[in-house]
Length: 341
Ligand code: SF4
Image (cartoon, helix red, strand yellow):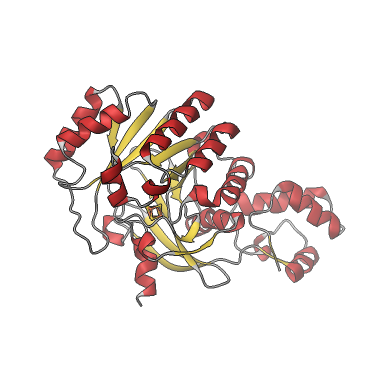
C-alpha cells in the first residue's frame, strides 16, 4: 500500500500518470492531504467514485494511528502516535494565548542514543530513525485531529534530529513546499552534533538552529550530556561561530536551569563569557522533574537573577513557559508511561 501522506506534488503527479489520470488529479489530492487534512480517500469528494475506488486499491491516506491523546488546560495537546511496526513517538501541539501560531513539536527518532541525564527519552535508549514520511505524519495527525493548520514546527521532540539529518532535511523540504510553512518558522534543535551543524551551515537554510547547551564548562556539561565527550564545548563553539559566519543567522541557545547545579550567579557569568562572541538569543527552561533523579526546579528568584545577568551581557533572554504541565508534556513521558502499562 502506498501512503499518500508525505508525497510531494511531483511524486503524486508521477503516481497519477501511472494510473492513467491527469496531473490535475494530483493537485486535488495534494490539496486534500496538506490543506484539508483528510484521513481517507473517501473524503476526497471532488474525485469520481470510480477513481476513488481505483486509488483505494493501491493507496491509503495514512498508516499512522493516535494511540493516546491528552489535552491540557492551557490548550497544549500531546499525542502518542503509532506507526505500522508498532513503534510510537510523541508529538505535541502548543498554542500561545497572545499569538496566532500553532506550533508542532515533532520527534525525529524512536528513542534517543544521546542519553542526557535529565531526559526520559534518553533513559529508554535508541530504537530507530524515523523516515521523513513518519515525521510528516506527526504534523498531519495534529491537523486531521484538530482541523487546524500548523504554522510553526520545532524539532524538539524525541530523538536527536542531526543524527537523522537526511530524513529531517527531506521533511523540512516538504513542510516548506507542500505545507507552505516557511523555513523561518521551523526550528531544528540539537544537543551539539558538530558534523550536522557544519552541514546546516553549508546548506544555509532559513530555519533556526537551537543548541541545547545547558552548561558553560566541560565538567558540568559532561554530567548532563554524555555527548560532551564526543563533541566538547571548545569544538562546539568553533562550529557555532562558523555557522553564524556562513549563514549570518542568530542561534537560539537552550539552557535548562537546575537548582544548585547550573543556575548560580558564577555559572551565569561563565555562560555569558562563553557566549560573548556568538550571535544568539537565550531561552532559559526551568527544570521540570519528569523522571526520578536528584535534579530540582530552580526558584523564581534564581531564574530572575540568572536572566538578569545574561541580559546584562547584551543578549536577549526569554524564560520558556511551562506548557501542558498537567498532561506529561515533557519529552518522553507519555511514551515512557505507555511502556510501563
Ligand atoms: S534531551 Fe534530546 S538529545 Fe538528549 S536524550 Fe533527550 S531526546 Fe535525546
